[in-house]
Image (tube, rainbow, N blue to C red; front, top):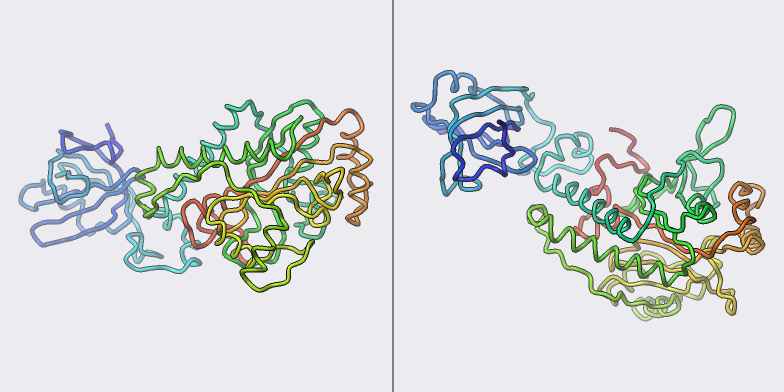
Length: 429
C-alpha cells in the first residue's frame, strides 16, 4: 500500500512510494535518489551490489522530475532526510521527464518570476513555493470555519454583470450575446440585496476583477476577495468581526502549518487585539509629519504616505472616519457630520488589506449619493429596488486574500500568492 512520504519513519519496516525524482547523485558503486511527494522527501539508496539487477536497469539514466514508484525495506540512517532511507527491491519509471527542465526545481539556480510563471506547474513542485498554497488553503479553511461558527451563510453572486459596482471605468467589458456586460468588480451590490432578503449574515469567497493599469508588486487584475455583509450592524460591529477573523486565521496557520512556515523561513507572529484605530485626519497628520508633506482633508493616501503611517503604527490597525467624497456612494455619512463617512480600512504596515463601511440603507439617500458621484440611478435600478421594501441597516467589508497571504508570509510580490496570476501583461498559462 502506497504511503505518503511524511508517514514513513525510521521504524517503518517496508514502504511503497510514488513521487518525483528531486535529485540524483551517482557515486559509482552507490546511487542516491531523493524522491519527493507533496508531503516531503525521502532518500532512496541503491548500493549496486545489494539491489536486484532489474532495479539498477530500471533506474539507469532516470531524469530529474520523472515520476517513479519505489518499493523496499526502510532503514534508519541519521544523515538522510527524516532519518530514514529506502533500499529498493522494485523501481518503476511511471512517467519520464524531458531534459533540460524549464527551471531548477531544487532551487539552486534562481529563476525570474516570468520564467517561473511560464512553467508554474514545475515552480510549485518546489517545497517553498508549494508551502504558500498549502498555507493559502489553510487561510481559506480558517476564515470559512470562523464565519460558519458566527452564523454566516455562504453565498455565490454573479461575476458577469450589466453595471459597475463602484462606478467609474475600471471595467473589463464582455461580448454577452446582444447585450453589454462586464466582469464584476466585487459582490457589493448583490450582498447588500441579500440583506433585504433577510439573510442577515452572508459571506462569499470568490474572484473580483479590476481593469486597473497598475504594474506594481501589490496589484492584480483578477484577485480573490472575502466579502462579508451583516444586517442590524454598524461599522464598529463589522470591524470587530474582521479583527477576530484575522487573529483566528493567524492562529490556525500557526497551529497547523508549522512545517510549511519553516519551508518559507517565516516566524509567524499572532496580531494582538484590539487593533489600534486612528482617524483619517490623524493618519494624514502622521504622513505629513513623516514626509514633510501637505496632504489635506479629502486627499487620497498614496503609497508613500501609507508606508510612512505603517512604519509609525508597526502593527495591524484601522483607519476610520474617511471623507465621504472619497468613499463609494453606498458608504453611510454620519448624520451630524455628513462630510465624514462611517467607513474604515484595515491596514497592515505594508499595505491596505480590507475596506468596509456601514452602508446607506435609505432609498432616498442612496439615490442622492449615487447622483453626487456623477452616476445615473437608472443604471442601478435592479439594486435600488431592494431598498424600497424594507432594507435593514447593515455593514460589511471586503478582504483581499492575496494581500492577507502576502503580508502574513512576507512575500515580495503579490503574484507569488496566486497559482496563475492575471495582471496587465499576463493572461496565460
